[in-house]
Image: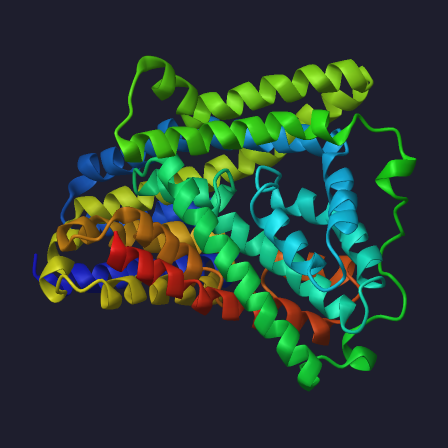
Length: 443
């Protein structure tokens, strides 16, 4: 089959998946499988090999990320039940003044708290952000709304065990520890830089409190964590911090060439999250009623199920794209320069997100389509993953459930959300490419 036919069939597949999701209203999971079947059959793989590509892609990705996603979501659900989030935010209030609080808040949400499912994290932290927005002076609401949007969306695609970051690492067969280290650097730089830019623009007229803010808090005020009966913060947060430290420890040891059975075992992200999950479960059973612990587990299993299916079928399409040989063809169209290929990954993810509205779907599809060619150009796949994640943040708009949650749960109108969410996260999508390109050049 000619190069043009392979390119055309791949483009038709991606467009077809978008049309099925948007126009026909088919579930993204089904649309992705149908796209993979079409691409395999028209590209000459044949029925048997097409089915094998689909099942292999799903199975390989689940073997890579399935337990990590499940353990991460369950750990996050227990952290929420233990009140760790409320207490952590209250501690931030005491440690940081009004000027720096939004930066600390956004960075914490985008890094430390990424094991918690995004919608749950938003529902829990939104009342706290709303209350804090009234305490930090002029443009406080604007800054906290932007900090919340940046923390949730940026962390989702860059920081393990955020669902998007885990899925990207799995699609590209990346060490999760490596994704964690480079992702944290990218996320913190992006959140702080973008929030500083938004703050400057808000002070110069971008944000109009009369039109962009609601007069009353959209959600009920929450009482300070200190007035509620929670386990001590150090105890509640220790399982999550231990898991993250073990992941970072494993990644650093791997980069330094340090290896032993104990180091490799404890530094494995699945084992690290399992240790954290067992610790959180022990604390929850010690400090919480049995019914509350069971409810947290039930909520975690419900949330992880839909994530696992969507991630797995994204792997099916990525494997089919790889098997039709697109990566081999693309390598002839690029040089060893990292700038253009990574910008192409960003652009594909951005277009997919604008069309579909799913950050995770856009990022893993872009990474799956273009990821196989990058090692041939000398580009580390971790930067492909980060570029795909960055592109998938472009134009968070009305098709996104997160957009409406951020609008309704925070003290802002729809007009304000278009500024604090759509405009700000789109700026983060572009700004993130600065550290990604710099690190790709250096490493």
